[in-house]
Image (tube, rainbow over all chains, first blue to last red):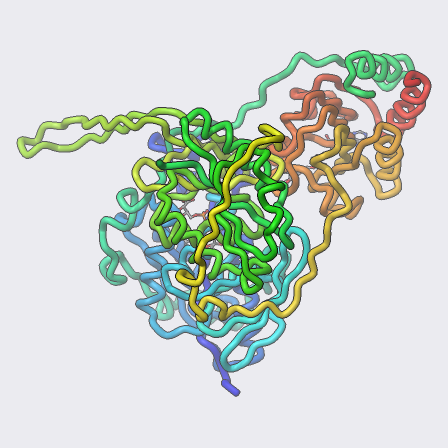
Length: 271
Length: 350
Ligand SMILES: Cc1cc2nc3c(=O)[nH]c(=O)nc-3n(C[C@H](O)[C@H](O)[C@H](O)COP(=O)(O)OP(=O)(O)OC[C@H]3O[C@@H](n4cnc5c(N)ncnc54)[C@H](O)[C@@H]3O)c2cc1C
Ligand SMILES: Cc1cc2nc3c(=O)[nH]c(=O)nc-3n(C[C@H](O)[C@H](O)[C@H](O)COP(=O)(O)OP(=O)(O)OC[C@H]3O[C@@H](n4cnc5c(N)ncnc54)[C@H](O)[C@@H]3O)c2cc1C
């Protein structure tokens, strides 16, 4: 039996969508990430935990966290290192800005190919900002490997395969896939552990386990990334506003509730 | 002819509701575009597929029917759909934003290098002028305008429901989008509508390697709770206070012939089961009557219920955001108002 696996975890830095202000969008419809508090995408933490559990069991496992974003997305890599990850890769380049999911998954796949050797790629099911859940399956397609989406639990891992319980809308499915494979992890999977004091002390002021790559390092074709490489165009963005209706105000008195019911009945809302 | 396609998801040969909803919407869009509506189905034992879907106005059904293709597996289905698209050149293809659709559509889009818009809440046809500013050799700026006709406007919430974006796919074809179950209305177009079946020679598209992911076991439960079909929904939020109080909602729903729904906060608090959650990360509903009990009405909740015909809000807080979209606002305690509603409904309805 192998003593370890090679795992790449994809993690995205996202604006905390609980706290979205007016200045979150730029004129051209792209996000102004700088204006929002940044966190690790929640389901990416679930993915990270799955990787760390494999490493708990097979200590020679090598985990690399890969993030694409602004230079400050390095924070995501740090959080990984504080929890026991071996290496972080920051993919950052102006050329990659404005990418839709197709261009994003292409760049990520190129970065993974540059890393080279891996057994599995683990990522979150969905990011809370773009909200598409497309990057995982698209990266798998670009890498030419199978995918297992909505993983809730890794049930078995052998030298050459992984068995995963998937959480579907209407039930569960258990599937087995050979390596290499890409797995998207569902929010119902185990929560991520907290930082570990030892790893924190070791990595706090040490950048030696972090690599920064630009577009040139991963061999991308310019016309396949950024806005140019994105088939989707954002035509417009509207902030959600409440449109107040003319509403009838009632109290909880017997008379008012009686009126409400009579109103609904006479308008055939209730039969 | 560049037609409009819908991928029809099936479970044991039965077409999913979300696909029927997409066919209904697809028929309308196809009429606007003056093109045909075609469906793709990949499963086993599809002998009554025509009977199930022609009436939604389907002109052509592309069928890959084989024991090996059921139940749904990503890779073979992706290969088949890609080859049908290459052969038929549709201008638009729609997928359900379901467990299956969201596993499949991105993979298809990536293989075809097409744009894909996730989780649309509205689809329309419209024109667009793309403006690009370029710098001439002499340093002057010039604007190039490229007009596009009859594009699919793909309208979707993002950023946790705080914004609504309209997304276009200008050049790559087909234009691809996913739509959540319950967002579009299921409507029979013509009971007697007849199309044709085109069997697809799937063995040319799929190799043994596409079956590397092995399904070990599967438990698909048919949900007993059918929120989408309920004409009346009595939905409870955190303000309902307890699991016991939720029983009051069930009593009211029973007498009104409705179903019980919930906000996420009520589900998280353990008052009721997750399948009842309404909103962005739950079900989208549009009943005739929506009674919101102790629900504040955050944007993520409203996203799943704001198209209800009539909204009643029962809330102790006069300023709860939900009240702004309610037709009737009852200021009061849920535990006091609900028993009265049951009482007066029984008294007034004969
Ligand atoms: C309002 C709005 C709407 C949009 N709608 C669409 C749309 O409909 N279609 C479309 O193609 N694009 C769309 N985009 C662009 C899209 O949000 C970006 O391409 C984004 O970078 C990736 O998509 P996502 O956030 O949806 O990620 P998801 O696909 O939801 O992410 C899934 C997982 O992939 C991994 N991952 C994703 N991005 C990264 C990253 N940068 N670094 C590391 N790991 C990552 C993470 O593990 C994540 O959990 C939209 C953008 C905006 C602002
Ligand atoms: C990414 C994301 C996705 C989400 N998806 C969803 C989703 O799909 N669905 C969803 O619902 N939420 C969703 N949420 C959560 C949402 O933001 C709100 O937190 C949630 O809807 C609040 O639920 P609530 O109205 O029941 O609770 P609260 O906001 O706590 O409101 C309780 C209400 O009850 C009233 N009240 C208190 N006591 C009484 C009483 N005795 N009688 C009458 N009224 C009383 C209060 O005045 C208040 O208005 C999502 C959030 C995020 C970030």
